[in-house]
Length: 414
Image (tube, rainbow, N blue to C red):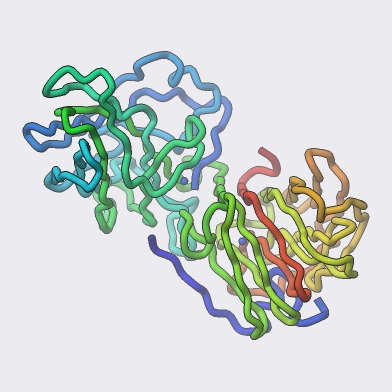
């Protein structure tokens, strides 16, 4: 997995997601109602006897997929028409597990569409990339055995993770790539990714169906979503990754346990923030949502925060032990705050930017505050924003637990 840590001057760092010192982030495109139905999937067929892996287009096995009303334009797959998945020679091995064997090949992908994929914009500015996912939509299913074996199975052994694409917990492989339109200089992934399957020794063949999930450049798609689950470190273990900013010289200890990220910035001044840089014009709407539990004392400033900064204004939302609400660049609450105990349980917070009109925040699905767009701080991070981020201000022993963070640009709400 590739990731980048972006170094910024202290002045810029202070302005991105809060103040310095005491004065104080597979993409998966969002399913879009009304989009065209899935016309085909890609079937991978593995042959243990001949040592081959082949891909071909297939029609959906049932109307369930093609009838899905939330199908996204960025989830697709017609082998040889919209994409071509290819692979190296197959390797069959006997792992340490008794009665099992592995089937592996290194796979790559070529874009056959007439526009770029892998990010919401074609240029490499801003530098963050949403990337390309290939996920298993059904199977793998045993198709042949050397002897009667009704209990034989085959599983994906090395998927990069699981996310919700067409169904929950679907395994995927990921490329941190932006690909040119077909026949462009870079219309093919830079590296091949190992696909490894494990099967009972009697299995001689299996099949599986995959689809591609990749952001399409505007105007081919109009809204783009990135979903981070707190079961991995966002700056080094997730796809696509987030950049980590630390303000101050204090030590910190970010950990993952029980599927949740814990931020432990340490004593002030030490500010930890994760962010991603994506295109976001003033006229574009966006939202960010997170499930968070704050573990700290009651203080004046917001301890944890969410931010949408389009390089003109930073629409910020803060979380303290006893209240939540909009915040300015110094993490000071502005406008109407909502009284709530944030330390005893997880709550879902959603911050919305309605173009250049207003900012709105929700707590557990209920709208609790609104401010005109002009009320928010002017960005103090030129050259870094536009960005979307989350983080925590250092405040002694305070920590925050994050179950998930997701954001979408091009839409103000899911």
